[in-house]
Length: 263
Image 1 (cartoon, rainbow, N blue to C red):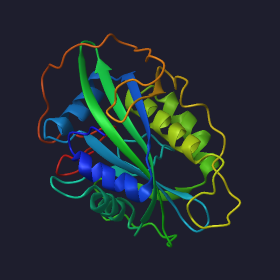
Image 2 (cartoon, rainbow, N blue to C red):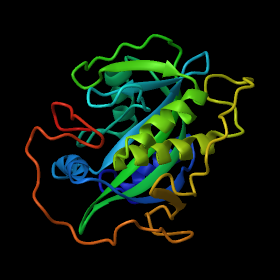
Image 3 (spheres, helix red, strand yellow):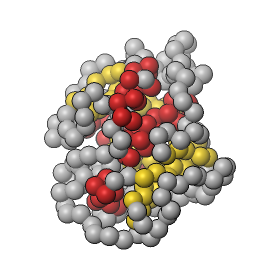
Image 4 (cartoon, one colour):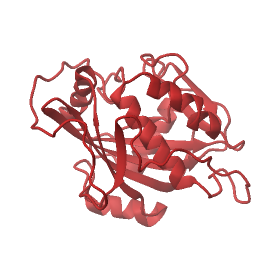
């Protein structure tokens, strides 16, 4: 259950409440500026994000767009727990800040151990991915400097045109978000989505997360991130940590950071 930001006992308690997640590993190439964005967070002692797929009563999923995102690109909200903040409290707080929603986590979907590589440099990251539901259909982000727009989209939009727009950017961190979303929808496939018992809607079919999603793919791993399946086809040979850091105004994965440096 390794994540340097959370004790194993806390992760075990979350699993006991919301189910054991699929443990996955991802390695992919990112550009120098993208690696700097990740490094800006890791240098502050944060190595994780909490990503949440929140469903409203109509079966739509909440998404956000950051100011740096190209037009038409949205993704599931994410953020980080503050030092010492319990994981699920951080999840609810981030949901309120980024979407204005009160959420109820329903399932711990994924724990992804990611390695972002750039030449002979790399940074490790862990994404904790959850399904959740909300009784509201009104989005009202409380941090307009970080979130340019929030909107509900259908699962078909998320797995179709939005996915294609993200891949078309060629950005490594967007490829990672595509692979994460693919894996989350695959984990939900064939099951009623979390907005209510008896619903006939299920997650749409998406490309397999075990196949590379444009120069980067997921493979199963153990709870500690050790390979537990086919070997990763790395795009760039792994190297060692190194290279210059970034200043206090740098951002986390995918774009402009929040005022405290969190992605």
